Length: 317
Image 1 (cartoon, rainbow, N blue to C red):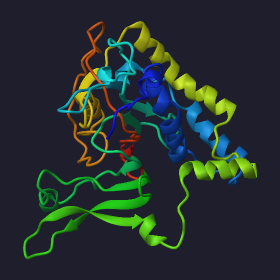
Image 2 (cartoon, rainbow, N blue to C red):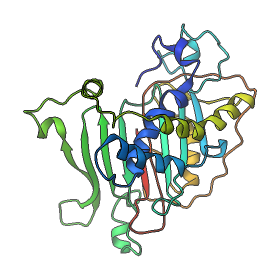
Image 3 (tube, rainbow, N blue to C red):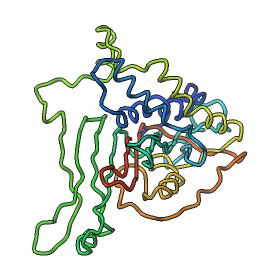
């Protein structure tokens, strides 16, 4: 929900992929995908996360969408930021990347990492979308305007730590109509007598206590960079221009095109029933003058697979 706001000089050297995807979002993805560790010790947790990272192939341009926010109304674009020196900068302020974990549990399930600045709102969450029941009754499938959305489990990391289900429920009345509702566990309401520590509070306490389970090991760091470094070099060498998107929007249209290739209408909140549209993503633009700017952190982990026990999508944003 905000842009770089004075941090353009720093941000322009790195971009959203280095700043958010490679570290924060990839760590959340590893925690979601890892198997149960033998204990809560730092060594056992890191070992399981490392197994996940070793199963992820390097990201490619075919499964990546980058964007840069532009002016919308009174909200200035990225290139209008006074601290951004290079007014032809191709630094991305938005990225949606699809990764795959090639192991028996997650083979075929896309994990979508999505982050951006100047988006509609500011939040960080993991969103897990489940498949619809095969052979669902037609009356039930047609009972919701716009199609029957899939059930979702959402873990909101910030702001307002929350866990909630989005499930289909019959609308009260004599007719038969269903609607998607939320079943919430809001930590601030449920645990009113307990102080919820800030993220860095907990990390500083871990440092003082000598607890390193919430920190990245050197080997994790090596494998994390191995996933993103090839595409970062390709973006620079091929001079790929990020797609412009208005300040305060959901991001560039190319992100929805990428989502449709994996059977979804869009990445992020409000995912609908998986669709089978086949969209050919246009080749990334090269050497065209960039026009954009944006700020907000979203992580998306979205997946789709034929096995009924597996969720169909993950989104963290």
